Image 1 (cartoon, rainbow, N blue to C red):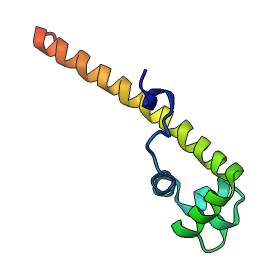
Image 2 (image 1 turned 45 degrees about the vertical axis):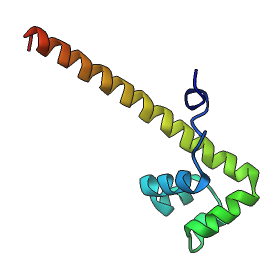
Image 3 (image 1 turned 180 degrees about the vertical axis):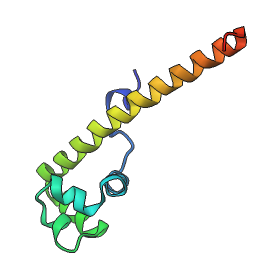
Length: 96
């Protein structure tokens, strides 16, 4: 197994991870999930990165959320790829 399958965080920087979560949830959504001042009071990418890099327990919580969501998205991606392959196979047999 490759490292990506065993560790979805492999090769993902904290900045990319945080930006992905902000894109999906927004600062308000992150503030609702985590009681961190960097998400509540004038949130910014730089202040949040600074806090998360200095606070391992907070970083672990944010990473845990990202990994959980990544796993759901990965399952959907695999499922959709299988469905697409199945449709293509049926089309090649003329069974549409």
